[in-house]
Image 1 (cartoon, rainbow, N blue to C red):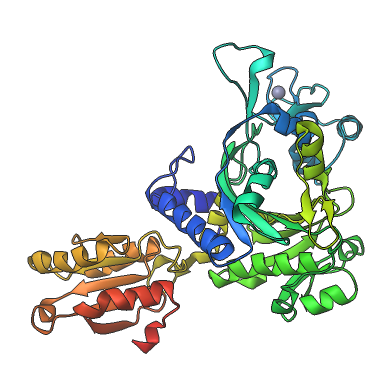
Image 2 (spheres, helix red, strand yellow):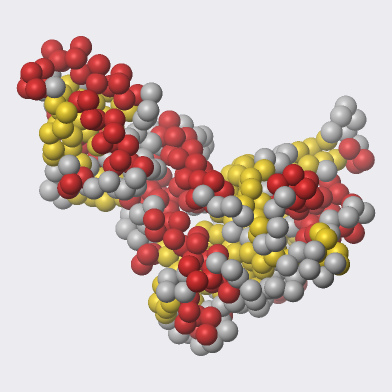
Length: 490
Ligand SMILES: [Zn+2]
């Protein structure tokens, strides 16, 4: 596997991402594809989930209620001489090679003093560590005083709670149901790093899934995933230094390690990645240890991906219980309860799972998964799933003399698919460029095409070719890209 730095330079060279992580061309297209596929899978294809689009500038009360004003902080410190700033957990992990997630300010100061950790740049001593709130502040209206402070949302989740009642009333959903949202969130990271991995501005795809408080062990969809197998790494396995084990959800639930709703949602999320081509060897689910869990969570499992710099979280699936709705009821004084027809009582639903995924991390997973150097071809082949590929097909005239007719083929496709027309350079060179951009199909127009009205379609992954009538091209591509059609059956 290539390193994150090599991936960053590849993305820049191919115009996927520009130096300051500006999103451009290929990446913008691919992020749209990721979001569209996520939305189709999680919202359009389900009857129990509806989507919303909440606001970015949000009332401070929301973040008081959620606990973000008080506790959404990183611990940081700086060099007394050169003022270089460090995030304490990163510094401890880099210098002392110990896990520093979830340490308190006191712990951090103790560890740094005991080990006499100095500035990495100038070797002078460091200040004491302090908490630093990660929310971006701004002001609403013309006056810049503390009464007008507001925040850019640090996560999308809270909007699903504050809009909860409206959604229920309008959609007439019955428990269990979910609310989904995709959109930007903002965190004032002290030292963004790992290329797109921790950014100040990022995009989330998230669901809050609500269930009846008396039915937390009752998942009506569980039969769909009983035989689904995942690499599982429970808290106990981690404590005993055992290796993760591949097992069915039935087995994971039988010992009580996984509760039904967690088993269901972990499988659904795992499957989304696998269906889009991610190698399951590089995916696992890991339970949080008791000291890692967020302030609101009863049990949290992360879906993790094996990046070149180690296993990292892709999404946390947390059982938030009724924490958020209760907090919002308390702070907003609004009634966010539901009326339960069965018991004739008011109930507060529990959030049993909160599948939450960063678009940029997801982009990186698909890029690492797709990246392949082909020794025979002597070029990189980016084996993206056709649904995610920024360019679906390239139309290539064999020689410039055929431009006029080949362009007609391109014009016939471009309204339906994001296509690319390329007439410059040898055909081999053009194939290689398309391989590197992840374009699954190249369509070559040659002299025979003028007579037989057929073109040659080339498959990126195995370079196999087929001759097909131009009039069937649109249907064939649609079948290959969107409906799992097989190239070998052409
Ligand atoms: Zn220094």
